[in-house]
Each structure stands twice: as structure tokens, then as C-alpha cells.
Amino acid sequence: MHYGKKIISLGCAVVFAGSAGVAMADSVTYQADPTHTFANFSYDHMGLSRQTNTFNDTKGTLVIDFEDKTGQLDVEIDLRSVNTGAKVFDGHLQGEDFFDTEKYPTATFTSDTIVFDGDTPTAVEGDLTIKGITQPVIFDIVHFVQTEHPMMQKPAMGANAKTTVKRSDFNMDKYVPAVSDNVEITVSFEGIAAD
View 1 (cartoon, rainbow, N blue to C red):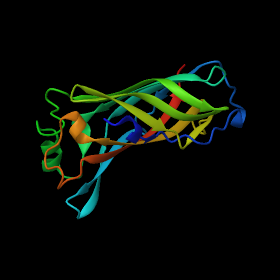
View 2 (cartoon, helix red, strand yellow):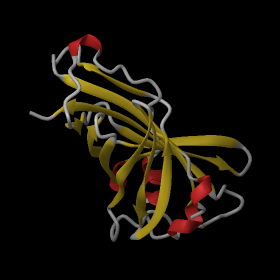
View 3 (cartoon, helix red, strand yellow):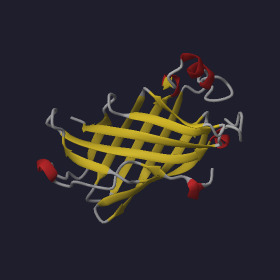
């Protein structure tokens, strides 16, 4: 994987520090809200269209310390939850030529490096593992919100992540170049502060 080409937009360029009465604790742990946390992927299909699909089961934890400007992010995607809108194609993508979910049911992203510019997170660097292959990835942080959840009345955060990877780097090069090697991965992450 070409490190410089891995750009993930973790949905984080605006930080509402202290808004809605939320105190900036030394370290806050956010658990992903499973009903509002999803990973998606898109690619060019034979020059005919841009296909966008999703995974229905994405879990994660973000630990962030704004005072020390450090953090850790762990995301797990259940590849068996792939949803293309067509059951036959879902099964096709789970086969050996692509995700091979019988052997590798999950993909993970782990990071212990969050880069700050002042009080604003600007990048997340870590490792993406698919089919047992680990490659370095850089997250470009473009949107981040920390506030009180309007319904749960607890500290909450929201973020979006985007990266472009080469599927051939993860042993999934079937039909390249007719179907693009470059795949854009996006993650929408909403977290609620752990009790």
C-alpha cells in the first residue's frame, strides 16, 4: 500500500470543545453507536458507474485526550454484513476472490496516533487489516463534533472517515483493471461516552 495515497476522512474538522456544557475530561472513551456507525466502499465498475455499498455491522471505540493531544481508535467491520442491495452479489463478494469471509470474517483498523493542530484533530494514522493482510493507512480528519447527545443527555461525538486503498494490496485483484483497483472506504462513526 502506498502510504502517501491513503487518505481517510474521519469526519472531524470542527471540534465543539466545551459546547453544550460538555467538559473536556483528561480522557474520554466513546463506544460506537451501532445504529449510526457504518462503513461503506465505492469503486468504478467497468467505466459504467460508481458503485457504492455498505457493511451493516461496524463496531468501534475511540479514546481521546484533548489535553495531552493523544488518542486511540479501534474499528471492526463484519465483512459478512456486506450489503450491495443484491443477495447474490453479497455472496459473490464474500467468496475467495474477494473478502473470503469464511476465513477472514472481519476487517479491522487500529490506531494509537491522532495528530492535532492546536485543539483540533487533523489526522489519524494506523493499520488496516483485510484478509489477514495489514497495510498502513492515514486518516485525514475533516469533521469532528463533540457535544451532549440531545436524547441520551450524555457526552457524544460524531465523525466521518474516508480513505482510498488498492484492493490488490489485500489480495483482491479479481477483474482489475476493468473494475477499478482503487476503492474508497468511508466510515460514519457516532460514539456515546462510556459509563
